[in-house]
Length: 141
Image 1 (tube, rainbow, N blue to C red):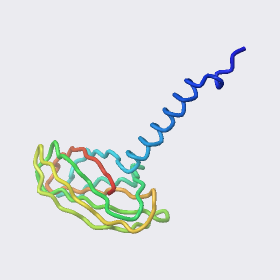
Image 2: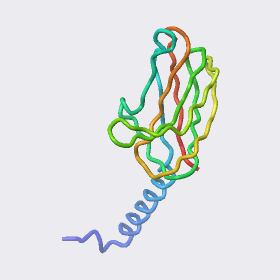
Image 3: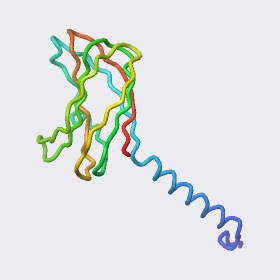
């Protein structure tokens, strides 16, 4: 019977792989994808609520940046960053408004004040029955 842990090459490669895995998880720890696809409804009364969809982000205190591209829909797109606490309560970190059209790209930042895995986005668009579709990345400095 051969013990694989006596093989120095195997142990060395295993340790190297673990180090790479740990480093990569640190690099990508605060970068999260986001996407949206919703209809503005009657007179812009509809919205997309990340907390209702279970789409939460984990951040520590500091700046949070959203880079996004709107693929479809023309109008004012409002994006809010919120943090849920309790069952229905939330804290808003501000709402940013963008005059979007297809292939519009932009970035925005919010400052968050606490460690939490309950941050989420809340989106609302203007217009009557305008379909808004887009994607982006949330990351932290």
